Image 1 (cartoon, one colour):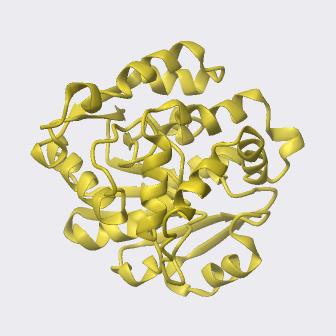
Image 2: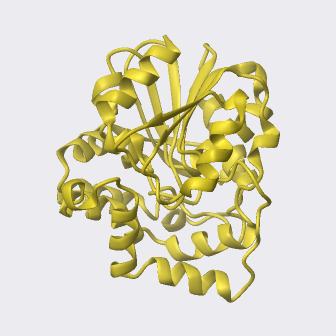
Length: 295
């Protein structure tokens, strides 16, 4: 049995965050987020998910060590045209941490599949996967291929190469390092094309606000120990795909961008004056690309 304190361990913190978050777009997303109870695979725990809008459904998958807040800037542009489904991935964001040492790609995908079943979505899904969420999108599309229509990858990470497990105690040391305020600040700045112009207290807060969740460090260390997502391009299922990357992406780097550009099936589109987060750096343009591709 999973204790109630563990099942709902981040629910109270989530409600606290709604009152202290600076970014009004982030506050809007948090206020519309609901908590969905999943089945016995997850101890009947409740998971945070934003469901809003009417139309063809789009599932949004955020990146590594991020949360559903990542999509705050494109949400207003798209909510009047599609049904937006934005969960926190298992073991990330504000999701409850309910299993020890089982935060891995397999459980992330299983959790998404159970969530989709619980929502009883009748139409085929479109998917937008950002950074690590791009790898998750391809693996999910392999598992439920017949239920997927089209996919957009935003600066996808982990498509090429092999996954690499980080053993103990280095996984715990790495997770602790990622929790340092200066490290968080530098990583946030690195994600933008022009951080001096684009990064302020709102962006820095959102990049770190989920670190207050119970179990954050252990779940991150467990995921690192699993090896995470790697070589996910092998899961490609011939669904129509568009890959959108910032040409100023310092996180993926030039070599990875060239691999994405040269893989014809990924339908690469490079955006000028854009970093690792097209949906945050250029939200209006990115929303138009999403709208045009899915319409």
